[in-house]
Length: 388
Image (cartoon, rainbow, N blue to C red):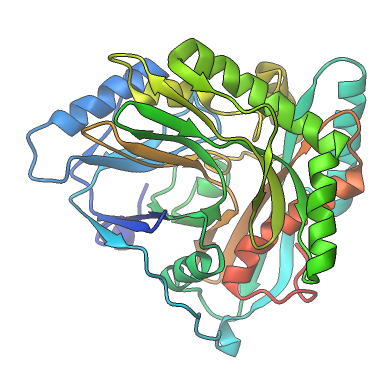
């Protein structure tokens, strides 16, 4: 439940992408489907959008990693679109706001290496093809972080990302059992819809970036030729292509991925498009896709069970979906990645890595650390001083 102090404050949702910045405040009606499955959620969303309320015809919110669990979707009291004009240069952090040492890791570095090794053993024995294993790291500061300042820094440092912020009242499992502010800069679009045209850009296959241009270029070229990363990416694309072929007309699926850069890492990405069949809701397609093998694995059920049995913590909203949809069925939903939960002077981050038969535990640990640095940089973490 939300505390009395939080209840008095209007809940806030922000989502910035492609030069636009959505700011929504307050709640006039929650989406409360009878069951959290695609058709049920789609119907409930459309009922809330059609309700004769003095409020924007917009539903915003976040859905958990476990798509069978309740999400947090609502029609806001107020909403506006702004041009996405983050300042060109962030103000320096005051010393009191800089991060201190990591206070908790779940699992520990060695625990994560052992977890990856166990997954590789399971995959090689034929129990799985791919599983995405995550971990959390918590850092503390000498003074509370200002969520709005962190959001702006995320936007400045990650200009091509889906930058998000949402006040969470608690009750969503794991780090989201208590109230907090969930924010981040996701590189990955799960579904956008404009008219009837739908688009997704799954990412899988990652390598860290380097400050030296020549070394960075070599790293990107090696990623494009990496058998391990191409195999990992292929599991994701095949699963999503299967859904698009079944649920859309004119699906377009490239034969090879392209490089997708973020400030911290290079990804392999594939843009897949199609046209929604008449009468279908984007939410039905969204639930068919989520969770994709990019955050879960393949086969889906076995990978999910391995995560639940072995990861050691409840993901809650980490690796879920965050976004918006309007009354014309236009929407944007991104994976809730490269982010964390803020509670005063405490921040907890999440990152995962895709594990296949040829994975090496140390390499997967390094990948998760590289991904966490997106959020750590926005908190003011200094390279070399704070090792997630």
